[in-house]
Length: 616
Ligand code: BES
Ligand code: ZN
Image (cartoon, rainbow, N blue to C red; front, top):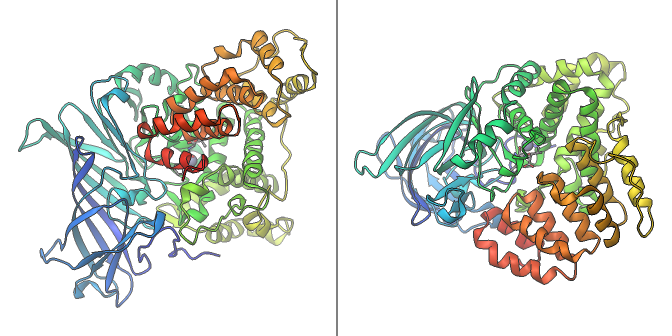
């Protein structure tokens, strides 16, 4: 199994030399959509005879100067030809004093980003809620940090960081770190300089920045919500359970080490549901359902403060160690805050998501392996799916059934304590699991585990755990009723949908989507009985629109396109575009709409949807 100093998605020579600290200085230029400035990397040489430092860069980072920060001596450097998604290696000749094991060095690199940096979404004032000021936000996971700074862009390397960022004075800048100051810029009073410090070592993919007309409100002793002023109150309501979730996570996993835990609600183009940037989780505004029903995403991002940010996968091939664990912990929090039945219910939904991903890829596809091979220049964005989330958390659930719920809780805490501040491989994980449970291992409790099938076989897991179906039964019954009525004439038994919780409604629709498509008459009837169009909850609306498109309901095309383009969360946008593309009467309209809207989309979303629509 993989060695922790090999990362197929980084060109950096991380076995020879590693970064310990990063110091960033950026001037943000909204007119040109670029950052100019420099980055200082404090490095430690791990072997003798390391002549060069190789860094990751991408999207035409323009390097103007490289020097030894202590002596000012210029260092020879070369930006190599780009290697597809991996970007262009930046080779820097090390001074001879830094080439031996144990030596330390600080290198200063002056550079400028390009307006097409894949990590940054730049928004015109017209694309913001306030319509007055521009906005920018980053998304560095998985390998986009290299588009905004030359770095060792591998999750196996952890460094502390500090930053000094100058922006227009009417805007607020936040980063994935603790704010340490803000002051008017000394040379130009139309600008303002913000400073930040992250004292916990973390991987490059967690570097994050947002600049916009942001306001905030305190929602807990260590938490604020940040967003444009139009959303602050709704966000404060929606995420009011944050401190309770943090405290529950701490009781499961040990102390929260990052100090502050703030939430940032982004503009609709944000490509993900949430992103666990340290001290400042980024979330999509599609979570603002008005009833706290989608706050599980916040529980998920909170959990990453331990699984992912403190204990980190050493390469994207081991992504399940980040996401599978985080889904598992997210559901532990849900279980503690609600009930064990709710946790079981969430796993049932997860199994279905996994089934959908496996069906989409095909049973034999390598991206359905828990450990997908990513060598050969594969872009981790292309391998992204529910598989590491759901196969990973399902595996942990299965292990929990073998050792017992209480014992597994003890193990989880010990696992965090063992690997905190480090990055690990699946082999490291397995070794520690067997060491922790050595008595059970010796007693043969784990003889039934088909380890290699779990890790390396494509398709569904070798075992389907037994889940308590009590919260799902009602959804299943209603789904059966609808899928068994023939042409039309559904008999409504009173209150059958209205009495369900939002997550049960989602489950009901998810089950129906797995059945033979309904016909347009039944869709109309369902609309008539339940008034489905009234639901604004994004997860409900998304599945309802999918059902209509699959039924061949042409009157749903415009609403589906609207949802696909108004919010850029890829979970919705990609699937809706794909459904529309597969629907002959919508295909051309889907392509035309994408082409017209693509310049408004986040670069990652635009690239991925273009591939889905076979335009690239
Ligand atoms: N870290 C991920 C988002 C991510 C993964 C971004 C890979 C880029 C590359 C985040 O924690 C996440 O999993 N978000 C989910 C939330 C859900 C599982 C509750 C999402 O965005 O839907
Ligand atoms: Zn996650």
